[in-house]
Image 1 (cartoon, rainbow, N blue to C red):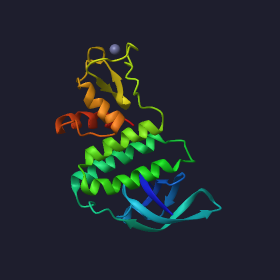
Image 2: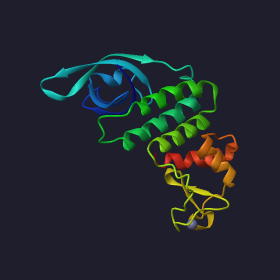
Image 3: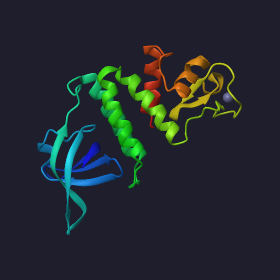
Image 4: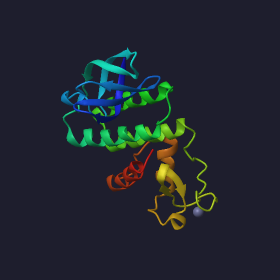
Amino acid sequence: MQGFIIDFKPVRDDDLIVTLLTSDEIITTYRFYGARHSHINIGYKIDFELESNLKSTIPRLKDVIQLSFPWILDKEKLYCWQRFLKLFYTHLKGIEELDKFYFNLLSNLVHKITKQNVKRAIIEGYINLLDFEGRLHTDYECLLCEKVVEGNIALVRSMLPTHPKCSYSKSFKSNQIKSLFEEKSSIELNDEELDYIWNILLQGI
Ligand SMILES: [Zn+2]
């Protein structure tokens, strides 16, 4: 089985509770001596086996093999990736069964990040996630005053559109946001604008 590590918590000595996002479920597992193994880290993709234990409701994680990425030693890429993957733990908390969309999105992103700017790739991926979950507001209705935003658009948490004067937030030209929402492309955004949107994403997916 394969999965992405979206959370781990130390429990007595070197053991860990590890949460994995797999193609059809979120799995919470118990890893003995996990802290001693460098291949347990947020964002890592692993191949693994589960072993059920009669004494515990949490299966044991074993035979872990790290499936490395071509950019695993690129500090900036790995740092951004780990911050993004961490957000899935909170976002999908309490969910067990999962649509394949999430695993596929992350697997495709691993490839995209090899060639593309990491923040661009992740932001475009996140817009696809919002669209999949029916949370992408292409009606451009302002979250605050509920009127359609005609000119410049400002974004708030979860990429919700607002009038810049309603949210007192950074103003984007409407074609920039429409290209992002409708073409799933960040091409109209410069690096500084991209950083701004990246910080919105970090508030929670
Ligand atoms: Zn408004």
